[in-house]
Length: 310
Image 1: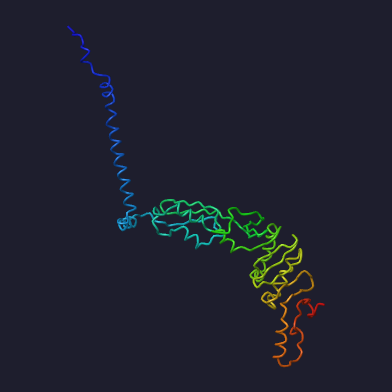
Image 2 (image 1 turned 30 degrees about the horizontal axis):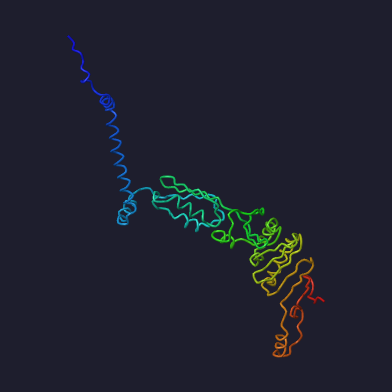
């Protein structure tokens, strides 16, 4: 005969729950143990990687690893020099590729003068890929006392400033001055590039009346170009430089606005210097032709003899 069940012998609800969940406790404990071990390993590796006492051991381990840089692929590099890019990259062929910091390299490359931004990728087993997106400044425009980099169309290049990498770019580009000079600069600079002997002497080009240009040379001479005839004038100037080195002469200005002659303004000679030269110099035959002394303003047709201008 079945005996009635005593309520005191029945297990509690907690016991029943624990028995039912018992099969899940072991995996949870295992995960917890693995997590503790993983945290310990990470902490040890960080200490190993930063402690200078382990530097020789780290170097040996790195040298034993097979992953080396075998190729560096660069795209978009036009204005940036190969030397400056190599220095900013901070890695060379044969270096351990996992020791190469992509983030640090990208920050250094982005700081180069003509780089707007870059993309640096590491492709295992041994390739570094660099995509450069360069700013394309064409000239420096000075307008109302302000300097800015402009592109070929005359638009301002972003992130301007006279310090840092923009200052380096400023030193390498031609300078154009005045209103409307930004939009007219491309044609003049192209024409100057076709005459390298002339361009090498030019330090600035000033826009006059939004219709023509004055060139300033390294020695301070000003060249007045004719309106709409810059190509022909620069060709004439290049020929004169080849024949008589006119750009190397210490004159104040060379006026080329007349199609058939040059007007050269020379530095005036002090009266005392003239008297002293006359007193100290023995009598000589009167000079003729190109040996004749020039007046402060001298008009000389290219096809005829010099003559003084009244």
